[in-house]
Length: 216
Ligand code: DX5
Ligand code: ZN
Image 1 (cartoon, rainbow, N blue to C red):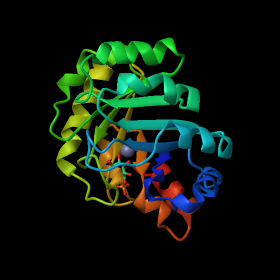
Image 2 (image 1 turned 90 degrees about the vertical axis):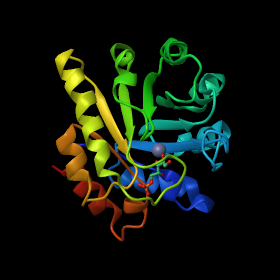
Image 3 (image 1 turned 30 degrees about the horizontal axis):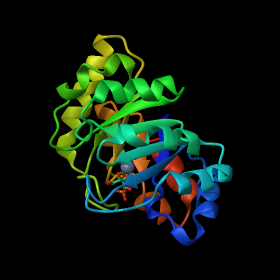
Image 4 (image 1 turned 60 degrees about the horizontal axis):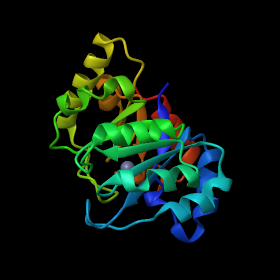
């Protein structure tokens, strides 16, 4: 079964705490929290104080996706706020290795994210230290965009390299995931599915989560 990480970007922000507990009860494995700084991506969302405030609303894994420049500056803040996984963009940091080491030294799980234009091979030299690789299936910045099927070869390339090295790796996909697109991602080797609009706009969120869990 796949792990499901609903993106709160599509939640009702006026009731964010309730939305997070609701989605946790609906069977989410993780809570995907999109942090944007208006620099790395054109949009601005939320920061560590909000993560800290909603930490009490769920006991699920907090999967924090940093779409910010020089993410190393904020690792500690997000750890203190209650992040479990800290995922940052390989394109956003001057020193990817140091950022990974910092996350590990603070006892949390490091992940790197790849924008659509970044090759799978860019991630290879860090794989040994990583908990997860996030292959973006849209350009980061906004929810509700269309899934990019041509990213599936990248998912497969990362999975093949992990298998070759015998690494127990989670591969996450993010952007345009629904019951229609999830099977492609799973077949390519993804096992953590982020979904924002698909889950939060579903009439029955539990059923939507269940469908993604069983996608194959
Ligand atoms: C986009 C974010 C995604 C986004 C996904 O930059 O990283 O997590 O919320 O939204 P959907 O599932 O609606 O494409
Ligand atoms: Zn995301």
